[in-house]
Image (cartoon, rainbow, N blue to C red; front, side):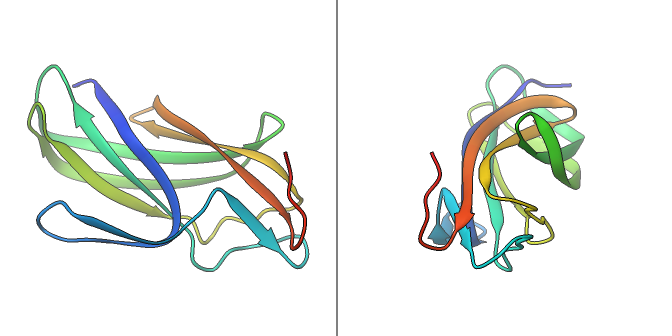
Amino acid sequence: MSLLICRSLILCEHCMMDGRGRINFLGVFNQLSGEQFPMRHGLFEAAFELATLRRPVFQEVLVIELTVALDGQPTGVIRKTLTDVTIEVGRSLSTNLDLSPLIFEQPGDYRMQLRVNNRLVATRPLAVCLVGERTG
């Protein structure tokens, strides 16, 4: 198993990836606001770039998991499996996860944790609040 790093983790409403490695983002954010709780955001994706620095990834299976936690307690998990993945040293793989199924039961400062094959590769905060309010 090759050691992968995450070069970027972006939360947005939608991302489009072309065959040349370019990514276009729509509605990049670090805070979600809703009228009431529980809340679900209908357009919600995590886009990220994985790279290898030491040796190539060659036809590996990558199990990607994004866990959302509030006060250290998991509140949701989204998983995706990629098969036959090849990444040359110095190159990267851009992919995304659909986070629209996640439900936020209450406002707060959430923590997103991205794991690849059970190894933590990235974390980032996400503030979730009522419309007109801001947390943290």
